Image (cartoon, rainbow over all chains, first blue to last red; front, side):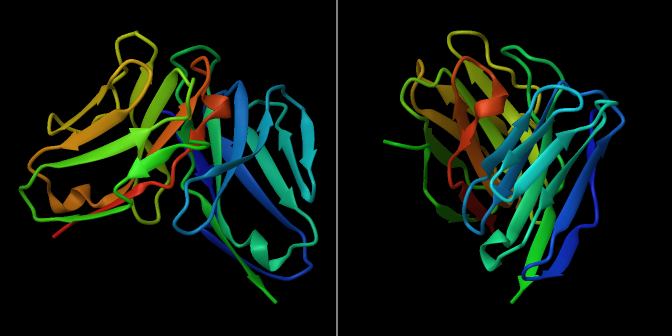
Length: 113
Length: 114
């Protein structure tokens, strides 16, 4: 089936640094999503991307829908301690009632104060 | 309620027992999803309900797993004869009009099979 690749599994950065995460697939997706999961919580949607080449920001977060439609990246600028968590990318192959999300394995982000 | 509610939040069960996990979706959300998250893994799709359509059960890993939904409200995920490999967090999400993109997740049920 379709798989999304996120690596590395863990990232460690210093508070104030920028960090970029990539998500790739061998299949084309029509929608790319980025979620964050805090411990003991469900994933929360950060950014949704719907068009190839689209660049969208949400505060310190910026995400882009790759032109090939097979990748996306998420950038966090000026990281703060509360950015700690697991970041998942997810893709939706087509719109419609039966379009299920495919999730990557996630990247665990640690921020050193 | 304001969000997706799942119960129990934690469940420890003995191998071989049956368990039922409950999900209360956001009021008015016609679509409901169950996902499984093993430790260190991404989210694994289990089953999808949309309105009165037949559910998409393509993600259920075995016939020990089943789920029901009453209309557009509560859903229960049942695991029969639990095995240790069933230990995971089970997440429920709901959305409007069957589009996954605006799915809102519950806090999950952490199932431990001992």
